[in-house]
Length: 393
Image 1: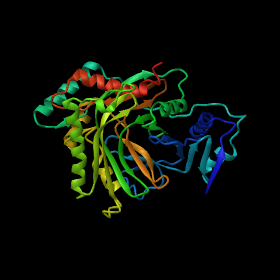
Image 2 (image 1 turned 90 degrees about the vertical axis):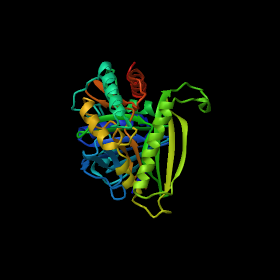
Image 3 (image 1 turned 180 degrees about the horizontal axis):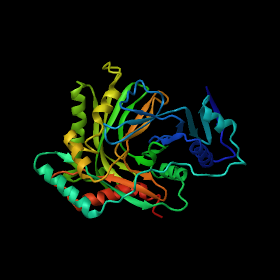
Image 4 (image 1 turned 180 degrees about the vertical axis):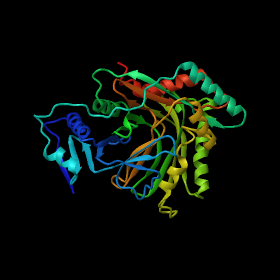
């Protein structure tokens, strides 16, 4: 059963602030998200998030997925015990859960005192020195020259002090306004701490029309407002990197003997303060009688060559040994699953992890044989600024 209510006299921000505070007090996990170019956003919550070794998109209950970079580690599934859809100052809510009753029937406007509304991460927040990242890139290049890899994607983290008045709900809304073409999200749980992101990269989408979608995204350069995208030029390194990601996706299709796919691109696209090359792939699952394609491709694609490297297994092992830190959920995947009969899973890029007084920003850069360590460092700084701009005041 669904019920539509007006949020008035509260603003959407105030409603969310109060609701998430109540969730935190009751030790519920919650997720907020807004899909790219969508007019509405959603909030889901549950008292019992599940840790799963494997994901079946066709069988898992409606909710939100949050998975780490390492495919061997367990994925978090947040069942949508409470589910709210917000649009134009109104919300649509499912009924029947314990906390939904608290939020809808016992929500006291006057008695509410604003409290903390997100879980802090338990790990230490560390920044990687520039010289360490330069050496890592040089080590990657050396391994490529020896023929171990075609491409590898080292990453780094950077600790930034949070403003004293930082508010995670305000951050969510600001990111929605700044990046209308991104998947904007907040995921907060005692299992994971709190992660905030605005990612441009779809991993797997399964629509009501039984079409499967994924994209290849690579190449990075700063975006200048007003630039004619048709006039943007790309370096040979960027073009080669994009081609590698495309070939990786096509190789996954070939493994499962899927030949009937549409490929569009590459074309230049805007992702916040950056430009990327993007190629879109589309498969009609009904036409090829392959209803499990979403699950199969999710397992094959993650982690993609855009966040790990090629070939996959040695790249993954190299990064786990050489990066010097645990990526945790950075470059994993996240998104709503089976919500309104659709699943939208994105790579967890352009994200930050929240601690008591600091945020940890993450970014990576694709390294090929002709990569320059200083250029890769600057690329990661540009990517970090997607989230950094809302906290570096």
